Amino acid sequence: MALDVTDATFPTEVVERSKQVTVVVDLWAQWCGPCKTLGPILEKVVDETAGAVVLVKVDVDANTQIPEAFKVQSIPAVYAMRDGKVIDGFVGALPEDKVREFITRLLPTEQEDALAALLAAGDEASLRLILEQEPGHAEAVVALVSLLVVQQDETAKAEGLALLERIPASTETRHLAALARVGPADEMENVRIELDRLLASVKDDETARQRFLDLLEVLGPDDPRTAAYRKELTARLF
Image 1 (tube, rainbow, N blue to C red):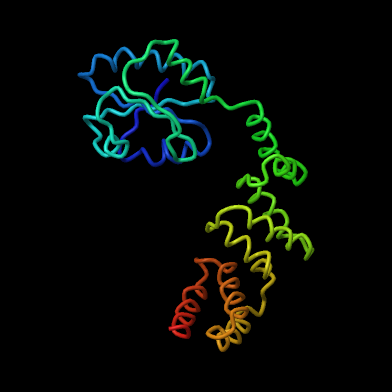
Image 2 (image 1 turned 180 degrees about the vertical axis):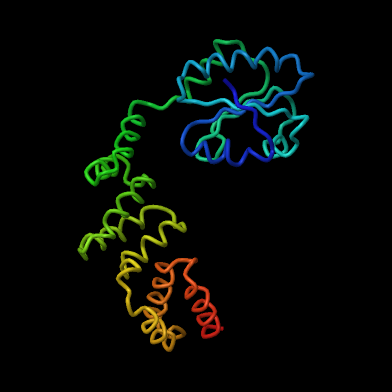
């Protein structure tokens, strides 16, 4: 069964959802005869995947932002999205055998299924198996580093920092890197004293500046000290 998606729900129901499963977007309209032919075929073939692929429908007359984003010039137009990006698509009403070929290309491979199972297991051994096969698997890197940085072992923390270098920086990776360098917030009993001490050196000492930033990263945005000390840092630097 297809889910009707609007301009408002597209970010959640399609973009975010595509990070977990491949989402097929069917752009259609009530007046479009070929759309009415293609729609039931898409639903039938996608239903056969038992959830490995999901189908959403967008009424282009009621929702103008989505077709503009896809640069749609004619309908029916169908796009497959994974990890927030378009990976395949077609325009026009294809016969069932061609639709089935299209959907089959989107199904996870046996290797992808195996990696997904290891990722779901989430233990250190499983995550290391993933990285043996895909050294740059971002989810596995983040999950493994999350396990390593909480250990009272400098070697494990150093390995975590090295692993993070394999993947693009993000809010999550920056937080993990800070944890690896300075430890969790509940261990920083004298953090205010240290932040005050570091302030005197942040302008000219890169090491002091990095530790200062790491301490704020570990405290997190909800800690009132974070905003106050970031203002102090800006004042010292500029």
